[in-house]
Length: 255
Image (cartoon, rainbow, N blue to C red; front, top):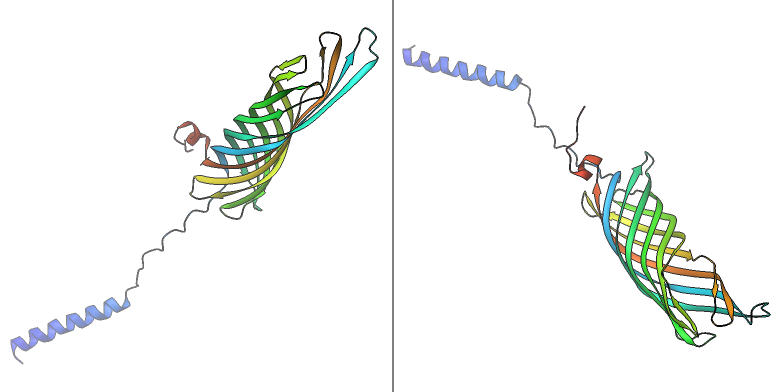
């Protein structure tokens, strides 16, 4: 056996031993990528919305003539349509429970241009009124299907109404705040992790305070009711803020 043959044989033996050792080594695989985070409705939100609003305004009153000792009461009752729009903002907070239920609170305030017009009245002339400002404080209850959230809602509605014009010889021009209730339902969908869009319908009824005032020249007038029923069809967008720190622009503090 030559020297060259010995070298080749030794080299082949080393290769064989290395191959056997490599076959016995465990095979390591890269860990799978983490699953995408599950979207959660928990946390603060703030957004804007636009609405169409329309309904009915009803007013009831009685005018007593020939005072003192009035003996003639003339009732007045008017109902007329309303239409217009709302533009505003909303903010609130959602709590998510283990069974998928979502409870939330939402506050909103809107600029309003919802007008009502009465072309004539019992006394002649005409009067109009306009809903100038509108707000709601509502609770929301829904069930989350991932990024899809149907819900019902209800709470307090309030607004500033400005009647103006002429009811015969009685001028009308005074802004008043009215309050009442709101009830409705809606759907909200998360298009991104922090952005959602929503559509909702809400019915509100607001009632003005009863009043009594002079009716020049002879008598006085009492107002027994002033109702404003409004149907609101709305679309809006919300930005979801998952923590108080993110809401006010401060980093989270870990413990």
